[in-house]
Image 1 (cartoon, rainbow, N blue to C red):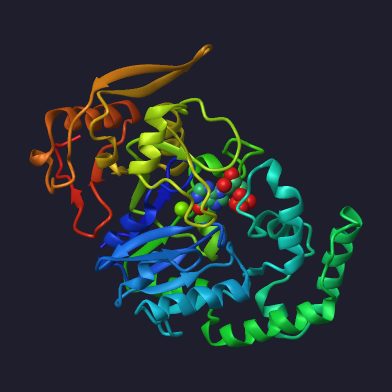
Image 2: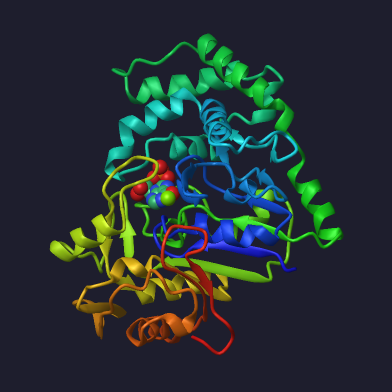
Length: 402
Ligand code: IMP
Ligand code: MG
């Protein structure tokens, strides 16, 4: 069984969680290498909706151990709350099922305060992600291992000082109180701490299949996305080695895209649809942020953007999700190029209900044509198509289909 990378090929929220959930059935490890609780992966397991933020979605499969690598950032309180929510939903994860790198950077209340004060210009998720990565790079960051050793106070004091200087009006909690609270939560998480790099090295030696779960999407990558309207981490394949501490061959590199597109937060969005069709997609696709509840901007699929995602990630295949949401739109527009006056579209005939399809032959010809155009134009085959939120509403396409 090969190692698999699953990444978002758009602006996040492509449905990576359900694709990961499907692929994790064969994996022994499910690993997050970047991002934090800004991510929101919604899964439907046995009819029950589960939202994950930092915990790898693959960890919900009992045979699959979740790991959170050093490239991620973590709020101890928020991770504890996520674990508690999962346990209440019937998915208790103990340290045998989940491991945390000691080199994770800790999101502190000062990061949250700064994100809330400044994040509106970008439309961030308000989870303190950008300020936490900024402090990491400025060598003012707090690693989990340092917090656990009781050495956080001077670092927290430096962070507080900076935020207070930038925003004199903000009320900031005292360092002592912050330290005590962070430490109590971190102590509760201490049994989960593990050497992610060494565990993965051992897994590679015995050919245990590993699944890497990207967060956000290619167009939110700190270097390659629509800067500055991006997140603060490497969301693409390049982030894997540095985000876990090991070079590893990724045999399958799956880019997840919706059959249309969405974006939350500000920034350029050439194929955005304003008006009734955009509203129809938002309502039918339940396009409201799973982390923040914000209505997502909706638009046509953007193939030049997918080509860029394919290049950045060396994609070997595409997973196209939520094609059922496009049902009953008479004409479907597909952006195949970006010209000087905006996107150049190819218009394709729409299709009706596809939610019952479980195989390529069961898709109407217009839906097949739509998927074919995506594969042809992006130059990457479509191997997974989902037509609904349930685990069963997902088909794998055999060789020879687009
Ligand atoms: P941040 O990651 O909270 O700093 O937000 C930066 C940008 O990335 C904003 O436009 C967010 O809406 C967007 N973003 C961050 N995480 C996600 C995600 O998981 N899905 C979709 N958009 C995201
Ligand atoms: Mg999401």
